[in-house]
Length: 152
Image 1 (cartoon, rainbow, N blue to C red):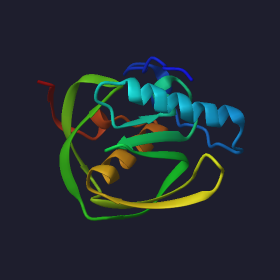
Image 2 (image 1 turned 60 degrees about the horizontal axis):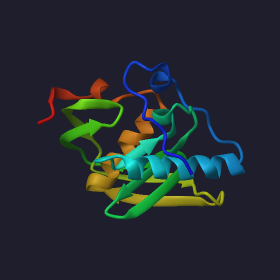
Image 3 (image 1 turned 180 degrees about the vertical axis):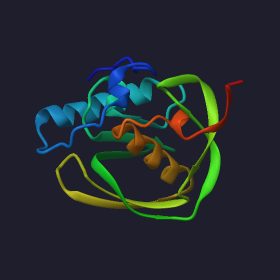
């Protein structure tokens, strides 16, 4: 597999709406593997969306406490509550900011086998799913953040 350079704010791919995956092909499986490798290689990342490696496809990976989630065409089907917390982004290095997001979400997606999955998440996992799905819409966390500040 391959480790990609993460594209940063200013790259137009981060502002594009990612294209829906219509068929799970070997290239999509390879994309999942490359996203995993790139995320694992990052010092402090929890999630990564395909646009962050320059590929405008609706694919994300999340690694939280050694639990890996690979989601193709993810959509939030339900959300509940609200909480504000600090966020950062591998594509916007050096800054963090307060972002208000749903406290609990249910995400529907396809897995690498093309099977439909539904994941209920809360807390940090819910936040990461929402952050990465925003990337698929061309939205960066700084678009929603308040009190943006340099990371210490």
